[in-house]
Length: 277
Image 1 (cartoon, rainbow, N blue to C red):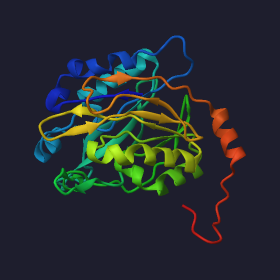
Image 2 (image 1 turned 90 degrees about the vertical axis):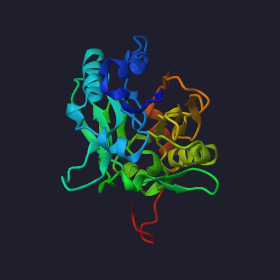
Image 3 (image 1 turned 135 degrees about the horizontal axis):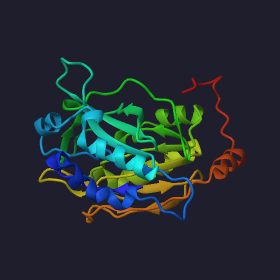
């Protein structure tokens, strides 16, 4: 799992932009099955709505994604990464915020489009309207198989909506991912409690690879990439917004712990009283 801090148009140079991920992409020979989880918007973070929209490229035509696909195949290392893509609707003025899964064979095999968009207006603080730039997805995608178990996909602001995580758990997720670019203002108070809640209520591993540091004059991210086990314990955490350099951490996934936690504390839904999510 990685912290990263992409800057604007740098994605156009495939080799240059992939350099920060070079360490993360080389799997550890001492470990077993592995996968790499990168943050939301790993391809770029624009300095304006117009720039953000203008840089969006179809995944298979993106130099950034092509580089990751080559690396995944070279190292037999599957990769989860957040990117921007043009809308499927040719008349739309907005783009997609996507999370893709690249297999160990270097193929794009899964895609999720962010459901909930981040519109923020803090008194004497930042104002953001993601909904002006990004079009929301319309589906909770079923968990996909990975070397670490079944992985359920969410993105950033989806974290505030437990319905998605509960649905993914019901569909067999062992791991739920929240690649993110949280603001420091919200992250300081909300980041850890929300992530621990999602892990505890689904009794799943939660991985949240996060953007970190200053991206441009207008954007700064909270960082604190984190991994939480099914019991709600933090098992790994990276640096916060004062850090501007990419980091990587390794997390061991024990699927027996998922099974044991769900066995010790069975969550028996009262669907006779409230609807199943």
